[in-house]
Image (tube, rainbow, N blue to C red; front, side):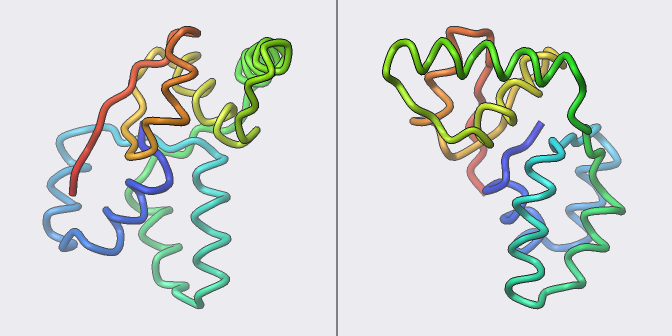
Amino acid sequence: MIDTNILIKLLEKVPLDKLEELVAQYDVYISGIVAFEFLVGVYRTGKIELKELLEKYFAIVPLTYDIIVKSAEIEAELMKQGKMLEPRDILIGATAIVLGIPLWTENIEDFKRLERYGLKLKVLNI
């Protein structure tokens, strides 16, 4: 699963033929939260053509009850410890945890706090 920063780089910097090769070789997942964050940027900047690429090339994982429960457990525990994390990041991390797949991100510092809950992090430099 990829985080918002990786999605932006893939869609804005990787040539379309390379992107097509990538998604032909791998199932590339994004959480519904990542899709939301990305689309806010699309509408804010007027780059509407990127919306079509999102729909065409990426499997969007919707929020499920299991993801919501895992997110709530994590946020409650972090609150008890006085360690706050952006709720959207918790939802993104919990999605990867529930699916049992790694999260590719450049935002290692924030997501590192979720490793103790089972999140596997990968760094992708594009």
